[in-house]
Image 1: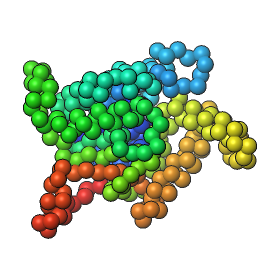
Image 2 (image 1 turned 90 degrees about the horizontal axis):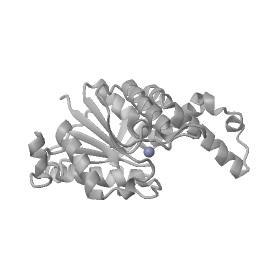
Image 3 (image 1 turned 30 degrees about the vertical axis):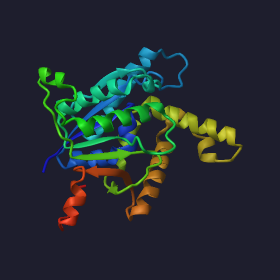
Length: 274
Ligand SMILES: [Zn+2]
């Protein structure tokens, strides 16, 4: 069955980093994928001469290119919040924006940051995770934001939610991305500012550590691809080994509210397409 997927994230590259292989796999199955990005990403560069506006424009374009590589054909919706300060936005305001997006795009499956995951130091990830999780919990309740009806947006139930995290907790779904690891890396490499920054940041960490890693010491942030490829393959490979795949992405998945447990108790197994 062709499903509709909505990804709600904080930054231009979150989807590619955390779920790029899975999204590419779903796009390959014919699922329609849409993405909502909460911030303008205007702090995402180490180039001292770039203005915030220039950075935001560059990263918006990179988000479009990265999503396209994964098979996201629809236009990305940008909510326009300031980068790095999303926790200053009231939860209920952000939740309303997420609920509006859910009621507009009417997804079967939602992907977002796991608000319950430990060790998440980025407030934008925490904030968007809480707002999107709560919005998807209540988007079928008609008295939550009844004003949406006036805009033609009816209540909508989100059946499946895939939560991702840098240190995930209660993982219950691993997706084999062996056939999509190259696409994930390709999509990430479209995020030039962020990938240059990632390599530059690794070099800062290396210098600060006093350790010797010649591969990184010799790496040029402008030539980021070999480092990104090694980093992503090491990460997805470690996740894969835990689940019996060469490369994998993992999630805390919540399906159909209580219904997955109910179905199991009455002997029905829910079939996975991915
Ligand atoms: Zn992020």
